[in-house]
Length: 143
Image (cartoon, rainbow, N blue to C red; front, side, top):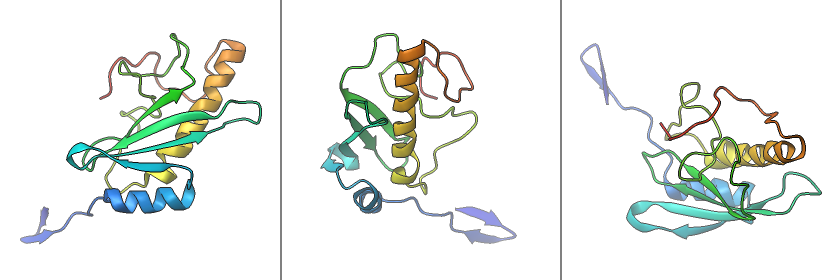
């Protein structure tokens, strides 16, 4: 809660896991929800960035109050792939330029950005250079 001129103002509530699941099932019906421990949720589904691409199986983890994480389950990414955090999760944005907020919808931000990341990953494999947007060179840990 914030305080303004002697009155308390409620801050916008976060989007619950159930609400996130509703949006995910509407926009990406092939992503299945798996309940995790301590209120976290995981969705697993496939994204195919190009017609010639394999269907990448990805996991999206989310817990209210935390930043969503995305990992490619299959096929394995190249060992030297750029724009990965040290835990293997995808670097979809630079936290100094954009910050995750609990009221954002994963199906409208994180999953489409993952498809775009996979597209640029495949271009990187084709030409040896990351052609996607980038504000940094090699992220080593998530901030």
